[in-house]
Amino acid sequence: MAPPTLVLSKDDSLKAYRLQSLLNSPKTKCQLKSLSQFECSFDGGLYTCVPFKRVFQDCIMKNGKRQVVEVTDKNTNKLQFEGDEAKRFLNIEANLRKLYENDTE
Amino acid sequence: MIISQLNQLRNQFNPTRLKSTLKYTSKWSFLILSWIPVLMVFNEHVIYIGKIEGSSMRPTFNPSSTSFQDWVLLWKFGIKDHHNGLKHNDIVLFKSPENPNKILCKRIKALQGDIVVTRHPYPRETCVIPRNHLWVEGDNIHSIDSNNFGPISKGLVVGKATKIIWPWNRIGDIPNGGREVRLNKIKQI
Amino acid sequence: MENIKFFGKVFGYVLRGGCFIHIFQTHFYEFTETRGESMLPTLNSTYDFVYSSKYYRNGRGLEKGDCIVSLKPTDPDQRVCKRITGMPGDLILIDPSLQKAFNDDTELEEDDNFNKYIRVPKGHCWVTGDNLAHSLDSRSYNSLPLGLIKGKIIAANDFNKPFYENGIFYGFRKIKNNYIDEPE
Image 1: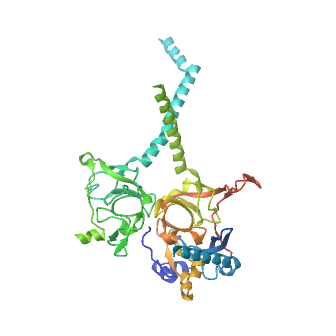
Image 2: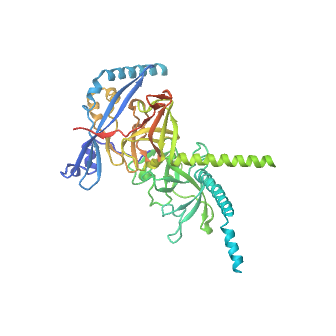
Image 3: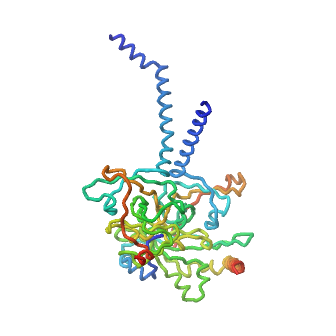
């Protein structure tokens, strides 16, 4: 287990780690980066996979240090969330949960 | 005299003899080299000798600032066993959670399921130790330990210190030390 | 006497050979099977064998987006394959995934999902399985100490696939880092 980690909102964490002024400085150079993973579920025949993207601001601050801040929001995966694949995925998941609940009863 | 020396020289550079020496050395170097992995495996999984540096385990190790580093026997076999592996008050060497290339030496103060009364600078007053984790503290109050980095996973442990083997005047078992951290034990007192 | 000598010799060879393989596997390179749904669709749940380079053990030279093999913090007898989604110092969201968003009932909580940040502590990394829906990872056991990392996965073979197909043996493919530039 890791050291106790604080869960904060974005503004609070930027304040807590004193990153605001560093990141807002004009000398800070940022590059938008992304990392794609998936959410898959199995319905006995095929895997249904919904791509899931996370977006990051990868910055080199004026003191030369690198700082990555995630900027994923509601709209990042909106298209995938509303697509047919996602509906199928959630369907399978709901069925699985039902099966599981019946099992435990 | 000179002739006999020349003869000797000629003997040394005799091709058949050279061949046999080559064969001999290659055979022996192969034999020695092939046992090195065995030694490494033995050191990695059974017994190793470790050096204790720093003052965090004072007075158990390095009791005075003038004494040299203590050397200890590290037992590694079977320490990951669930029942007779690591116990309360054992001294373990483990990879630092903050820097994996650094090895730290601390005393186990609580095992999985225990509730620990923490010390400064841990942000909460108590901590429940998760599955397969250990709470480790130095015997000295000035020590960077679980109060800084939280419970550590058993997977980080590299060995258990069982005996002091140097300096000679303290050869033998390792004395107990440190404070009691477990909530239920503290209440009993 | 001859027999004992013979067995001693055989035992010596087996011991030395076994130890050599073990040292090679822990310090240089390993080829092993992986199981489980957590890395779908990058790695199959069965019959997938991975090549892992041990140069990267203890987190040396690893980057965000790499696939790693590590010991499971809550059960060090088990090994897990995951992808690094946060390096020390990164400010990242705990779990913005689809399932989580749909499980929450109220609008407010859904918003909250995209505003729960943590900072990955020194000497640790944040790992998640490629299949976010069925993966036990940093979201449940918190950040992973770099000291538990055993290697980086660089390639994989799929033994469900035929021996030779389209110039590829047993579905061989490289496992790449997927942390890439995003067009703005």
